[in-house]
Amino acid sequence: MPIRLEPIKKDNWRKAIKLQVADDQKGFVAPNYYSIIEASYEPESLKSCAAYDGDEMVGYTMYGYDADSNPRQYWIVRLMVSQNQQGKGYGRMIMHQVMNDLKQQPGCDTIYISFAPENDTARALYSKLGFVDTGRVEDGETVYKLEI
Ligand SMILES: CC(C)(COP(=O)(O)OP(=O)(O)OC[C@H]1O[C@@H](n2cnc3c(N)ncnc32)[C@H](O)[C@@H]1OP(=O)(O)O)[C@@H](O)C(=O)NCCC(=O)NCCS
Image (cartoon, rainbow, N blue to C red):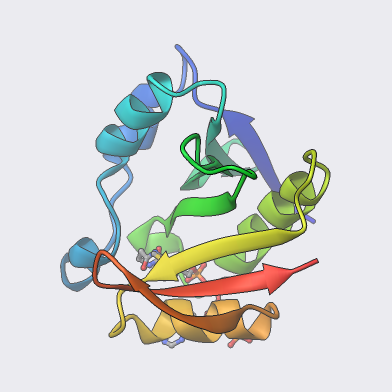
């Protein structure tokens, strides 16, 4: 599997905030600078990672548990692949890596993910990975889950 996740740190955050999705996808995911700030204030619950193919940074993801939930609810909070790197299988590979990491976390029996209802690419990707609709809508986003 060529994709490698590395934590956002001093030497890669500048590159990560430059990764962009297409203009018509901008409503689907927060800008990476926002996610990086968010994760930096919740380091115990959130992992903030750049995705690499070799030396090339191709995407970004943030995942972990909702610090307000009891028992813990695990979420893939952000996922994006750089506009010029999409459609090459990276999104699916990042998801596999994140799912494998989450499955090893204490008490993780379900993984949640949400997306804008009009985001057909995300819906197709998550469905193929085994996620199913919870019937919940949160902050205008459809919530899917994967039971492990
Ligand atoms: C969603 C996203 C991460 C997918 O990444 P990607 O690297 O392009 O996806 P992959 O190449 O791994 O493709 C995985 C699946 O996505 C779907 N997909 C990918 N490109 C698609 C397209 N242009 N149209 C429809 N479906 C598409 C397909 O179901 C594909 O499965 P397949 O290979 O069996 O056909 C990427 O499109 C993205 O960053 N979008 C903008 C931000 C976003 O929407 N993030 C998710 C927020 S919840």
